[in-house]
Length: 164
Image (cartoon, rainbow, N blue to C red; front, side):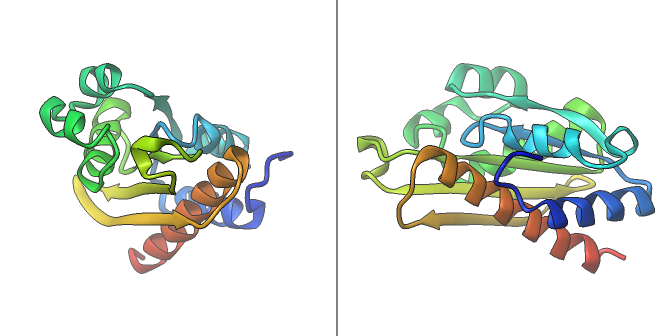
């Protein structure tokens, strides 16, 4: 890949999914499809990657991922609850065992207090296994997105090894 994604970690996750005969899907906003591109570019992607959705605004997150609109409006769609709901509902949407939900800020904006952070959640068979706030001290949009994707891949690899 020509993206700043940890290809070794990506391939590790891909191999684990193929070996376990399990699938994954993604619901993302802050990473703008980078997770989907990463999984689609992995070796044997057709055997484990079910698909993904990039939903940027409240309306689309509510419509497709069943996000609570009142809660989402109060936090600009950026919270642990939002990421968890995204992870759980992308599993339903794409019929996958594993799901990733990620939402946050890749550039400093007033709504984030000019800070870069995201919430990422990993679901497995209808349960949240991990839900974390990721912080990045500084960086441009592409650096932030790559940081978030690499963190998710590392966390996913860790969780999958525990689920043997």
